[in-house]
Amino acid sequence: MKKSGIIIAVLLVIIIALIAYIIKVGNTLYEKEITENRGILVLDDVNIEEDGKLENVILKVKNISSEVINNKKPVLIYYDNNNMPIHEAWGARVGYFAPGEERCIEFYDVISEYAKVEVGFFESEDKVTYTDLRDKVIYNVEKATESDENGEIRLAFKGENKHDKNVAATFEINYYSDNKLIYSDDFIEVLDGNSNFDTYEYYATKFDNGNAFPVGYTYETKLVEAVEIKDDSSEEEITTIDLNDPNLSVEDRIESAVYKLLKNNFGDDMASAKIVVDKTYTDEQAKKVEGVKDLDLGKNDVAFEVSIEIEPAEGAKVMQFLIPDGEYDEESGWVHNIGRLGVLRLNEDGKYEITDYGTGW
Image (cartoon, rainbow, N blue to C red; front, side, top):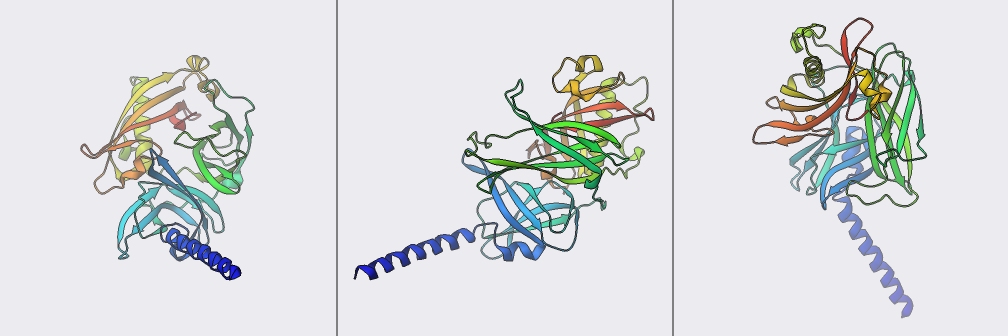
């Protein structure tokens, strides 16, 4: 009698576990029948929450197709119980994602109530085809042994771009606890052609909600993408301002150059933009500012900080303007609170161009 009771108890535990698993699978991103039909297998996922509310989702995915995913936008398509699409969440553009490789993608504007979700990639409107240039980028990573003046630990990325043209390199930093992905961060660095680079990203120790990472967590760094920067737009289409005009102020040059860069990045998806120069640093001023002093400014170069507002074109996906910062105002239709840093340099051809552009130096 006791043996049969134990067996029944064990069976009940198994049944309860199965029910819990079925419920979980009904609302998870792991269902292979959902992901494999688009050539993408989800290996892991992380929910990013703020004040108990789901904000973003990070997916570790593998390209299990035989095709390169080239210049496409990652998307999550949510369905209700009637198999009707009810919502889309977007991630940042993927330039080059080879078959058999893995990478992490953060999706924005996600939801938590749905019956199932598909992971896929949509074609970009610019139709640019990228070539994998990771073999042209040599780098190593060193973790600082001490915190900097802000109390942060830096991961220094140093190396060389052996390609003769500028390359946009995407570095990924993944954090694990017992082989489970707990967080992922990435950043894009514009590498000048045939030049050395020395940049850094902060080493993460806690989640966005302030909770510390588990004890004993590990991390890995990867160069997941390196593609040549394409500029297929004509100068006349973007701006008629001559950056070398001696009558232009430094602020006018920066505003015009940043506008051109935004127009190159977003094309017809951007209807308009407002750029305000908040700070500038000459080569002499930069020597006194931590982070800026490492930019190796020439006497004609200027480092800058700008605030940007963007008006998306009608029908354009707003999420592309919110990565990694920015706030959308539905009433005005503008995206506010975008902050960028960069350097306006005078190149060897005697023309001004933007380098070191991003959210941090």
